[in-house]
Length: 567
Image (cartoon, rainbow, N blue to C red):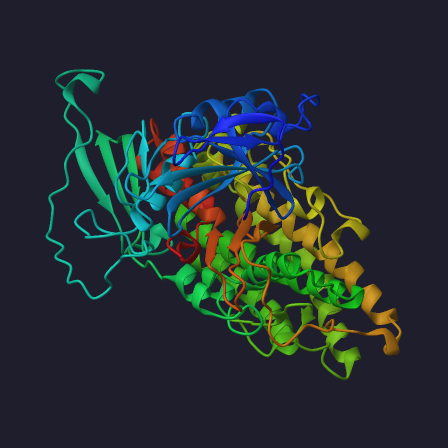
């Protein structure tokens, strides 16, 4: 947005090199990110919920290292690139794993004629894929990047689809290129060792979607793996940029997670847009949202658990079918509530589409029956899975992801909590009705495949606790106070150049939305931060040095959904 400056400290404009004035009013506060970067900053911006510090393109690494090491901003949640008429811009959205409400945006402008910036990969490993996406779609180049190549589009693609001069009618020629072994002879432990390139996917049940793994093997051991994504690039961000805030964007988030987590995705957009447009949500609607979201989380986790049984022990007839049975029960409840079984489109800006089904008593009875049967169902899952010696042999001490490595890759959700990272936005950045309810954040310390499975099973229990409390509140809520939606203008036009990044705890982890408004009823920039995108990037750390079956177990433990990876 438009910079706000005073006359305290001078710097150099990042695009022109001319002297500008930088506000340093808070320089006495050593914990303040604006003060910490006063000597590197060339301008300041104020994004919704976070200060924006504009730094030179050659000072990115120094700025990020300082924020990470000195001030504790250890979570690079999202990287957003965009083009303006006079410049390109990269925004690094930084948060703290200990306190995600403490945020800062590092804004890096580059001139239109030479959009080159320092890479942030040295400070945050997760920036590797994020910057590759920015290069691929927008056209910003990053110096010192370890592997700057396209990530969603073929290497031979001409142009950058989100650049302003992109010609969408230009024909594309995509020839077949033979895969090359990524290992050089001098990188092998033994010069005479033979390696083999194994292609897994993109159409294979174990990849949980259209994902291609280029795995390099030394015998049975994985020595290198490169996840190759982009096969179902869905242009979701572009479609949202063409839709109106009020009516046309909300149906899209369900399609980012066809595993059942759609209501959580809807909440991510609702939270960002409601903060952007300063919209209130009635308390009653917050309770309904919270209950519906936790049913959606159970829907996703049940599929993850059932599919994992197939991946690891080939258990189709028992565990997988039990999981589908329990998902059907949840889908029946959500169908009664939303009218849909998967693509719900139930949330609305300012609330929800409609109230609970009438008569309410049978609906509550259906929920109570599910909650009453759930403990016995979960005991069955533990007997079949966590108590299964074969599964234990396949998952205990395999696919280990240490906590600090998980943080560097921006991992969130059950993947991070399975590594002992105590991070959950429902508690740490409260929204909805979560801070009024009694529930616990589930973590496991070991960081292996078994831990991630255990976290999801235990999170189903916590979701049931939350739903039970919501039902108790809704049963007793006075009829004349059941307001499902606030008074939202028919057309929303947030103030031009307002920028916001907001996130929720979706089924797979932190699902964030960045929006920049331009004064119209459609976003100028809409960026989706899918948790599976960052979680999947950590797969090589988990798989290298393991064996082929361990690679499959590690991939399944991530519970990726390609709709939010390719977007």
